[in-house]
Image 1 (cartoon, one colour):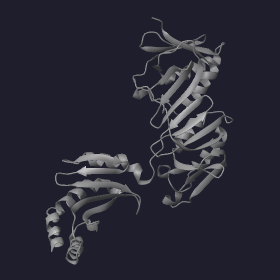
Image 2 (tube, one colour):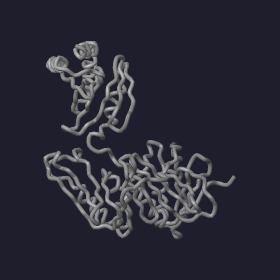
Image 3 (cartoon, helix red, strand yellow):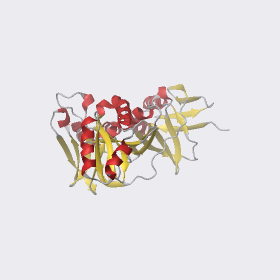
Image 4 (spheres, one colour):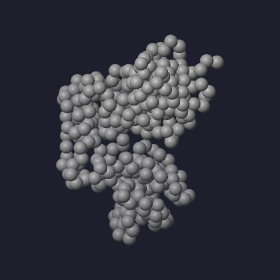
Length: 372
């Protein structure tokens, strides 16, 4: 059986390393650089928490088995190629245990990565707009948008929004939530369609920062918030996960708080929305934007009630006695619930348990007033 291997020149390694510079596999997590062949050409790919990128290498004579090699091996191959007389380096996996990088100026032997999950680049992504510019112009736009005003700390960075309209690309950052000044940065671009999305500012910056400034870049703006932003440029492409905006970005934190509640079952309905079933009733738990970023909790007390003065009077009296929650009516249904600031998510379990106890027997009690 022949040994898996290939030879890469300096130009190919320079492209791969420019993408590898800031969107790199994490060696301690077992990640590496995947090498394969598609349609007669070599493909390099890396998956990180936010980004999947691919770079097109030289043509291949025969199809290549997809293998994962250490990120450090690629870096060292570039160094070898710079100093080599031929500017070429050979990669091989001689024994399914190590990656061998060899050239006329030296060799490196590094264990193979542990991760066996091959990155899957999105085969189809619905777009709502396209913008074309160069890596240098886009880099300068991102550099301006990333500038933190004096006052807020770096960990207070608000969501950035990418806007494609009126013959250009703009980035809007609402610093007013940190008592600073709202900012909009704009560049001219060749655009098709109009759209906006929450911008993964740092991830896009990392993908393009080492590219040649004259490299042409195409941005594909996703049609839905659950789809990635696509960047294409010559021999590379990247799919970058768009962050959730506003209160929805607390989805995972809220989910973690709900799943540990004893005796409860949690179902995800959509981003930022859950159904929570206790032993006695079902609650709807949602992240909402106004006022502020809040968690809204509600549950149905009784339905098909006949609204009359006695019932409404009793609801008002009950609201005066309830602790931290309230009753209301909608479409002949009586609801109960409360709102909690996202920052107080640690109090969620106790608050739901309190409301659950307070509502015991209320369906029978209130239905009696409706029938009066």
